[in-house]
Length: 251
Image (cartoon, rainbow, N blue to C red; front, side, top):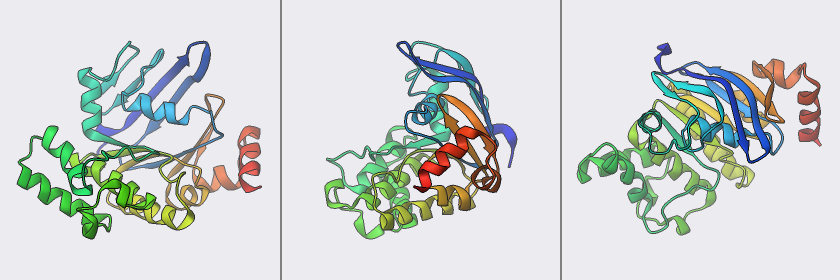
């Protein structure tokens, strides 16, 4: 795939008050790659994704998503570059963030209508295709409270795909699910990987990282401590901090 939608994170630093959450983080993700970000809780993984998507400001460094550049500023949400980034990279959250008053179909229709200005009929057609793609065509009329956790997360993936992004940022999207429901969601991600989407996935699912990721990045204490192919990072880690984290994961 073209390099034009590669993600370049350069010397990213983020503080919340006096607490340093990300410290001089640099990372390049090629278009079409799947990169799994693992590490202990509180390492800054979710903050990293929110910075890439323009939902959280940062104090130093630069983020490039294709031609779109985010730099340190007080407010990213409304800036033109952040809006453009969110057009090419959808974000999926741990807590689903579906609109409770809308059906599954209506949740997916919302962004194509408001962002892409599609007609209601075209947005509905696209939403039904996306529901079928994630195996939920028969749940189009269901409200979020009528869906299982795995079904909610699959609707959230379909919603993120509604504006035809080139990539997805996934923030611990299986952490609240039981093992069977996790498999449902991870299978959808693996299908999207095969279709060539760029995926940046914060996860504790080591099996998924081993099976589906092109690279595994270990973030600890706000810094990248290891970055490489899954077999190297997960089976032959070089950094002591990675070794410690993986031992704890296996306990």
